Length: 327
Image 1 (cartoon, rainbow, N blue to C red):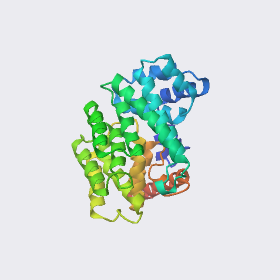
Image 2 (spheres, one colour; image 1 turned 90 degrees about the horizontal axis):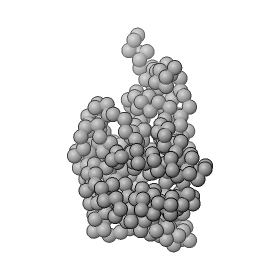
Image 3 (cartoon, one colour; image 1 turned 135 degrees about the vertical axis):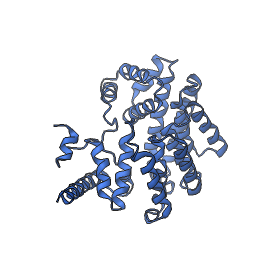
């Protein structure tokens, strides 16, 4: 019985929160890299991504999260010193390692002793990303890392603009690049709510229907709620953003893309909050046995439990609604 059939019959399969999001080749190649210290399968997989930039960025992000701090990444660079991909992966992994030292807390809650190490590792990541950008002038992947690093190094707006220009010159609609730029522009980093929302809504309108950037304004709303979780949901502007996502993304029934699970999870999260569980169920069912804690992770200490709880409630509501309509 397929996953969707099981869901439609009311069964709830176990949820995988593995961020490969069903990319089995990716999971296998990274397992080999992490467990055996063999980077060759992952290198070949990355080459096979070609100019599918969203897919390549997804794969680089996944290996970086799982292999940060492991000697195998430096060994790859040393074995292939002219490889832009090796440098790209190492810079992303060092960025992950730096944030692990700092933690994801607000700056005022970060241990003072963590700052020197954080800036040291992040500075190294920045140097490596710059080398990768030089060796791969058409690949946005290392340029996205440079934009991510810009936030942590608190670079000037001029420097950020230069880094962002390097991303859009390579891929004007790069999904993860826009996500990281949005972070730089949000109020808790180097911008404001106004700048963040303007950026997100402009990007969403420029993207074709069904594109991941159509959902970006909801991530801006999420950032605003982090400042005060009592704002946003009842506003006319949030209602307009959600309606626009419905029109330009949900109703288009977008083709799968590497991180579509995260976007569906965020939609399910918000639709649950605004008491539209049957609509949330559509996205839970579309995720099948995959899951993401985007949304929940910021507002609960047990985001995976909350995801499972809300998924079960949404599917029950959907089943109840179908039964009522039949009667």
